[in-house]
Image 1 (cartoon, each protein chain N blue to C red):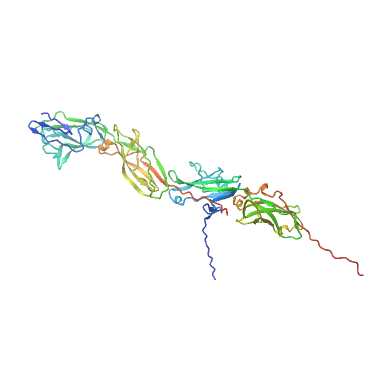
Image 2: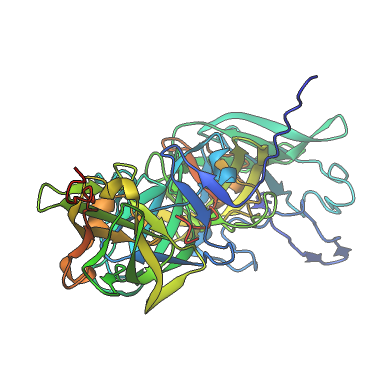
Length: 280
Length: 278
């Protein structure tokens, strides 16, 4: 029987005289081509990965050849087939995931290369009896570049005035504009991290995560999470950028260009009493 | 025996600045309204916020001075103020002077301090406002009977009628027998002062004072001494940084600005003559 290979599929087989337990798969995965609801979607036709990303791939073994296989019970029990992943391209490494010290042949971790382009994951199941699937299952992989991020101009700044006591200025900074680029199609879901340092009060916040609200395909705004409470000069430095595919690919991008933005919180002066020459 | 000199520093809300002006804060009782004379040049100042001044990342603050009637703001010395590039309406100076209007009335002076951080935009403080009462110049008139005379040289109390706010300072001249007048002035240190700060005649004339001519000024010999008033200043007018701006005009002075005093010659009785005995 030709080996049937499903990548990341949940298959229920009812054979005459045989009942096969449900074939579970690693959490967080879904069949290639399906959306999060398990419905085939054109958006999932090509697996998008950011260059340098590291992702896991799992193939459900043929249930006829490997009856009783249940990943969640034991990823190695009732697994007699082997799997040939050698047709995979664009990767820098491909390693088996392990169960204890033992490789799981149908479950691999691929580290993708650094050159954008169209590649593939290829896997062919070979039965223990020796029959190999002559037609590997292939999914297309599009490697895309890391997103970029910068402030629009060098030396950008805002200034705020307060009359409150130092330590209680409670300044809510207006959303900051950033420019970005991303090869992700559709909703890019750009996120960034920033660090706030100050002249006189040290580091205020370190690598805080913020979501960019896109105002165009290449620009958006983000907000500072906390109010600024001291009279000081604050530097908001961009430290990291991701889009949804980069996060999926477990890679982060480094902002470049204009990386700092300055916010001044100044105390408003108390204008003094007017002096004049005495009347008396 | 050692003498111990005890200095008592009386701390009042008075400030003597580098230009030797004695300022008073406008929140002191009796000083909440600044009284000035028409046409006078008056100084004003504020102290920069010391908290702002102490900050290492701040440059000196700037100030916006605005008179309600739009009169020009100059430096305390009367020269042009220093504008600040990029800050319309603001000047560098925290002490100013301006020439008051020539019409009595009430105006206001508003000042605002703005900080100047080394980087970024500064902050405006709140406004401080001072009411300014512009008063007319004081006036003086002669009263009493003219052409008074005396047989001997002595101090003469020339009755006058004054308006304004005491004390008054009167500059005058005395001319003997139509000759060159001798001026007695503030600059010469011999003008005449009368009244006290409690004498607030305002626009209502007070006849309670005399222009006292010292005997020494009537000692040129028997003859006619003509007294003319040159200027009358009250304490408000003397606040002016430029006294020349508040000098009297003709309408401030006696309509007939001439008061004549006579020192009559005292005759020397000759010996009695008679028919000889022999």
